Length: 477
Image (cartoon, rainbow, N blue to C red; front, side, top):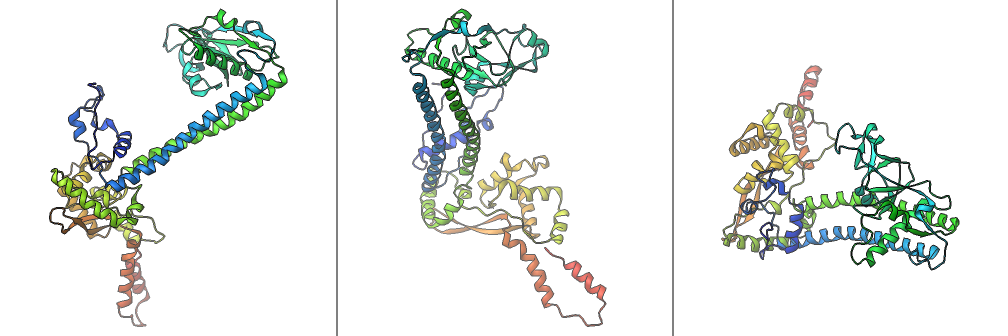
């Protein structure tokens, strides 16, 4: 099909790693025209793809599999709850479809006043729509289940007068869109003409029993359907639906059980939100190198061997080799040391110096190898890092000069990084910069203390205020 692109992994890419990367890939970055959301193959071919060694890819895949399994456990828990609820219902009431316990049978039109919803016209008129009055939609039912909140749409007070208002705890049924789906309103709301409402429900029937039973009948009809069954119900058809009438005591037992289920389902929904946030975070960290940082440190020897193999194959294929994914430095962390002189120095930075410093510490958060053209160009042009300095329109050369200045001022570290040459099998050393580690934050303080210790002691007659001035100038970093 012309609108599908097939990504075939090479021998350097784990197929599941490629899949997980594609789920985290922000396609909007390569769409040339937002008004026509499509990706051209040439744009997709220019996307930079993080390529750790195969053993690290396997490690990332293993972690993501475990994270995904948590979601599957949630789905399994929901299915188990649904099964237990149906079994408890059958234990109390028997098969409601065949009424094998021979309860009295009543029609909905006999135990409630069935009213059809209505919609104000014209549709979308701001005088009628978008106000404070909730208006129930089918999407609310499919989202919430047995107890529903009308949050998708709303009406003005004027619009509500042309609709059908239903009080809280009313049983409502969709008659189009998802015909037969039934729920209980958690609050007052209006229903449109795709719903009916059950008003003045017989006191011998509880809303939870009625709504749950109607949903069971709908599911049973759908299973046995040959052609259109339970589709676009009329008000008369709803009135003719029959349900059993078991003792109210059994209905109360079932209601109490459903309330417990509601609490458990609420906890699952809350945990689902947290799980989604966790999975999103794990995906981001997986393809930035943070997820496997400690694992890389523990398996450095094995990874180094794999790096040689990977880089040799990449060079054979004419690719440029970047080692950013292999080396990460801890970002600068806050300390308890008082450093007024250092703060003074930071305050004296130009705006451009200050933003480059923060770009390295907060956005890049690792080692930038300026002698590797591809890595350094990524540092200077990547939208996730360069947003701080875009308005300066600075060249890569100016950014490198600024990094040199920051290193000379002691605000970042300038280091040499070993890199294997896959062709010569020799180790080369590349210039790089990184944020300071916690232990490096105290070096200037240690130097000031050493200088103080090496200076000759002042005569006893020295002016005390001069001594105090010198101590103030030394300060603390």
